[in-house]
Amino acid sequence: MEAPTVTPLDEAGDQQGAEVIDEQSDAPAPPVATPPRGGGRGPLIRRIALGLAIAAVATGGYAGLRQIAAAPADSSPVLSGQSPGQQVSTPTDASEGVRRAVAGEAALQKMADAVHSGSRSTFLATIDPQAKVFDGQARMIFANLEKLPLATFQLRYVSDDPAALSPDRQSALGGSQSWLAQVEVSWQLTGFDAHPARETLPVTFVTRGGTTYAASFSERFVAGQRRPIWALGSVNLVKGQRSLVISLRSKADAEAYAAVEDRAVGSVSKVWGRNWRQKAVIYLPATQQQMELVLGVPLGTYGQIAAVTMAELDVPQVSAPVRVTANPKLFQELGQQGRRIVLTHETTHVASTATASPVPLWLAEGFADYVAFTAVPVQDEAAAKELFKAIRAGKVPRTLPAEQAFGASSTELPQAYESAWLACRLISEREGQSKLVKFYRAVHTSKSPTGLADAFRTVLGTTEQQFVIDWQQYLKRLAGV
Image (cartoon, rainbow, N blue to C red; front, side, top):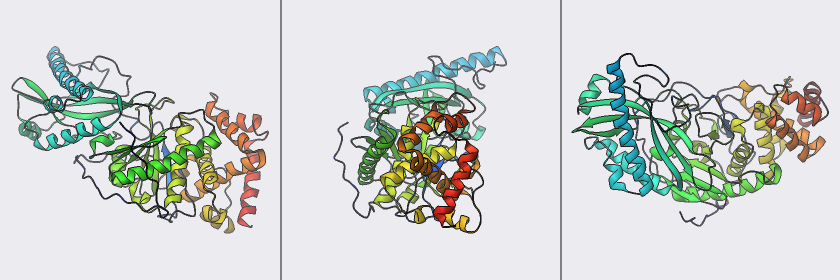
């Protein structure tokens, strides 16, 4: 794909998307919440909700990571009507499972081949001719996949449950047989991904006239299952110098975000170094609901989260493709500087592979804020408003922020981010920025359960206990107490 000219944000940073894509799926949202890792805000960001626009990183064990297809990909489908690894109950069940798997896998292979060859007619020939609503979604999905710079695209039959569809649904589908299967979809973006992204989709199959078709991609999502952004609406694609924006909003919005992200990549490299891909993929949904569907979390979970960095893989790995997903509900209220702060924060998570890192949340989020506020200087009083207010009321933090303090609904959210940022800034002021980076890397690469304590001792020449005492004094001095 040719890289279009990237237009920078105007001074007010108010370019809004005119195009809003309706949801193609009526499946309910999964019921399990996802604890975020967040940070990234400043005085130029309009104060929202608790007074912050927060960026987050979702890590292993959270959004979309506990899915059915967690097993590594292989060339053979699971033939059982049960979950992978379980034994079938009877020879009849086994033979029926084999027939379903072979028929479903054949349809999926034709679909994937059509994407590779760019044959729209072949792709649509795999769609149930009686599934009129799904036909429109399938056309949209194929058009979206044609736009993406795909190095690979694969569909793999994982498992099925012939009892998952209600009798009424089976009757409405008709045909000689219908069933629901879990299908692993994987795709790799040329120039951005070292390995394919992987998700699982519930695919409804129906056999009629001896041919098996796909009849839906959106029935019975399980808790934590993510939706590919290219299945939620018509996408606009913009490639910047160091960024790829996949947008469900307007192309103008995508161009603006690409320009900001290109600057963010440069800002992160100045602090973190250049030993990373120095590229980032941004997902720009049209609505907060679409953002939450992409992340696989209950609707309303990220009402105060401006952006989330997620690994688009079912298991946390350093090599997993990483995406920054923006919350348009908040981003549309940010000006140019505010967007730059949040995207620089998120890009720090991308560079440091925070989605598969053992670093504690206070260090991951504090360091990301440190990098963002180094790129866009902020006044302490504005950036640490809630923390200073608490300290002046006699509530000095007793410890570095705990994991739960970074939860999306935590009442300690503002103070957690602000105090984490100032902990990292204290290290930089006392030891130098390079020592802060070395400290982070030491914890990040440690294989020991005492990695944090070891890094305090070997890199900073102190203990966590002594550092907390020094940090408390630092916070009180900054707050004027």
